[in-house]
Amino acid sequence: MEDLSIKIKIADREYPMKVKKADEERVRIAGKLINEKIKTYREQFGIDDKQDLLAMVAFDCLIDKMTAEDTYQSIDQTVFEKISQMNHLVSQSIL
Image 1: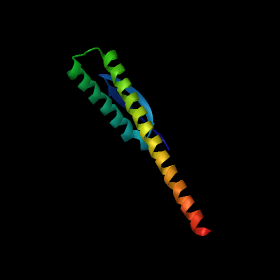
Image 2: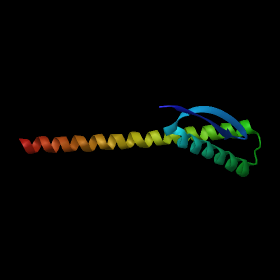
Image 3: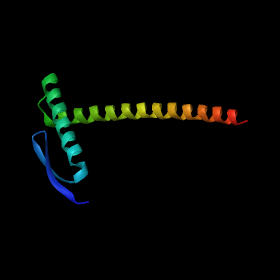
Image 4: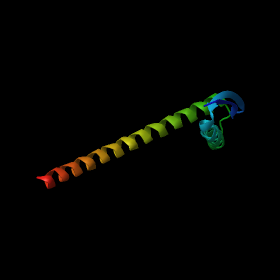
């Protein structure tokens, strides 16, 4: 699949990148979300320094990612336990 050359503007700065056509929408949405978070922090805390704003957004994104991973791990454990219970029930019914 051919890559597309696009530009994403983050914190008033353009970043050229090559992305797969299937990933273009996701990349553009990610750029939009980053800019929205920057705007929120700027308005909420009155911070204008772009490096500080980007650091805060990066930190916020990492916290979100860690929280999601914890949630998925919990879901995986629950699914594993349910499958184990079902296997046990099937094993008992065969005997």
